[in-house]
Image (tube, one colour):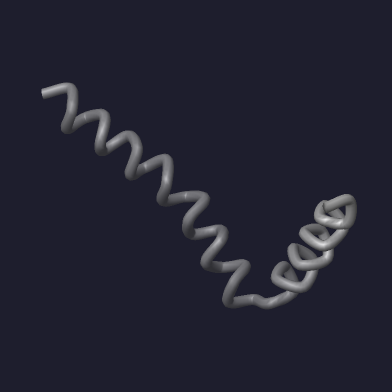
Length: 45
């Protein structure tokens, strides 16, 4: 359990080097706030 942060850090670095996964992560970073705003707009009605 003590090695978990180091393991996750290494995994994140390995994933960070792949362009497809980077683009998916960036797309989710942009889309999640838009989805949340849209859901709040629907709930507000």
